[in-house]
Length: 447
Image 1 (cartoon, rainbow, N blue to C red):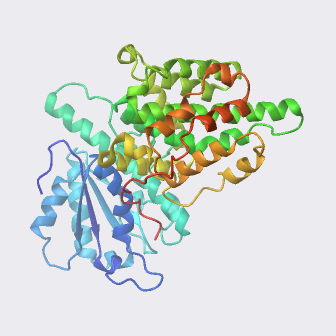
Image 2 (spheres, one colour):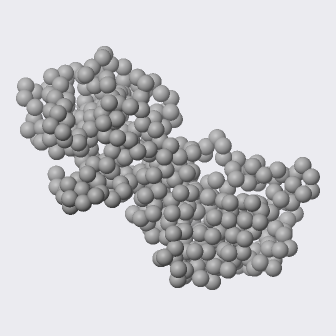
Image 3 (cartoon, rainbow, N blue to C red):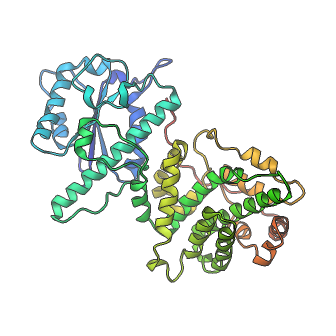
């Protein structure tokens, strides 16, 4: 069990009966369910997970006791099966309480799987409010576990910062957490079992600001692609000619700015030549009072510029944009978690070519209604094809993608139909279909 000295340790104790090798209909492999939601954060270095099944024994196993005395977060999986080992569980809890009594920063974080009698663990159970994971519908169960995983990662970040402070005897840096947004909470509050909220963007914001501009841009572009139908859908489509024109202008700007951000993230060698295009797009977004379009375009313009190192724009903007999206919707949180877990294996370029959604589409996502609102005689098929290829994943290559980000300003001044025609004219006739990247392991689906 060699572990980097500063990496927090999560120790999960469980009953074998809660992780059946051959689950019957309706049975859930609870250990797999819990660790599946924690593994993405572990894979990016947030902590290390140890697991150990409960064993009926007169004395506590020495290996288990060492783990209990070394861990930073103890996560017992609570069920009738685990409470059947009452003596062993009581001894495990007693060691954690003893450490807390000595002032050690170790956290007890029990997860309530199935109905159980009252126990000494009742004070800090998750899910909050006395709910059971087993009583939730599959989708809600997964969201409850996502919230728990967010809180665990936040606690682990605090633990890592505290270890570093004690080693260096200097003030700790902000916690670096590759997890989803979580709100700051005092350790004492966690021990008392106060409800944890997932509305603050701080943890994800900090993690993203530590990434390269291209990595932050790749993740921000994928978030913007997922949000594009929702953003455009908010515009009036046809109450009158002016509304219809404004809707099509906005749709064109949103697609083009995302294509621009995607290209400079995947192919940073083109960032300089596209800077003027990005600045024009930013000016158009500002004139149309669209701060989202303006900010994305300005971010693309700043990437890889001679002033980027001294500029505060790229990483903080991407961090704030992505973290706000994650805080606003649990489906986006799940997808951003997937992107973060895939990043170390794939890098920014291959990440950009993954399918857009790893799980089922959220209820608010209405691409088909947006597609139906686009006129059939104005060349919108180039953007429909482009967007649906982003949905499926893959890429037709650098030259193909560059076309969508390179429409000259004088063509844009003539309106979306002219811009669409320019794109069609500059696409290679034999560009073919997209090549698909190797797909990493998905996040676990609800059991």
